Amino acid sequence: MRNLIGAKRLFPGALAAGVVLVIGVITVPLIGGRDGGDGVKKPVTAPPVAVPSGLLAVVPGARTADGIQVGFPHTTAGAVSAASEYVDAAASTLDPDYAASVMRVAGDPSNTALPANLAASTVKLRGDLQLPSDGPLDPPVTFQTTAQMYQLRNVAPDEVLVLLLTGSTFVNSHGAMAQTTGVFPVQMHWAAGDWKIQAIGRTGQDYSGLMATPDTQAAVNHGWLALIAASGGAS
Image (cartoon, rainbow, N blue to C red):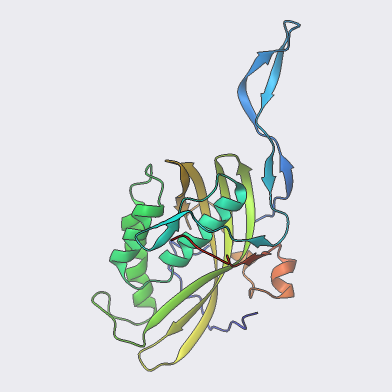
């Protein structure tokens, strides 16, 4: 368990915001129907969507692209795992160019604004941390984010809203450390044979009321479920 401290949230407004837990198994109706042999059209439903209802072991991606794992299974667990991987990468960098690069890999092709938006959010984060807005940063300056718990909403075969409760550690130029938490709503969409981010942060609803320190009873009371790191990764 991490004992996260932090005086204020250090996340840009475009990335930080907040969900309701969806559990069990659902069926998703499709448009249209089929003839049951009696001349009456029968409703057509998709196969049940398995929805995690407890702690989730993160599924590793099948391969890597630009330093992040991709190639996640077409399951709800795969969507959560992809969201965790992508947010960890995009929210752990202080390099706007790399943030944009992550979104070019992880972002839904239909949302062409994502790379530029993430780059702008990274610039804002540097400002919030009282760092220069551009250029390289000398050691020991680092910013590391890890998704630690999750919630789900609006689960369907090809899309799901994944809520991630994260812990972040910032180390400044003097080596002083600050820790904080964040809530990231991530709209995931199955596109081009993989899970992609369709939207992050700006999903039309404020989930900041779900803020809690990860891995605490308070987090559990808010409906958060644990994420367990993958034992292996893509090569």
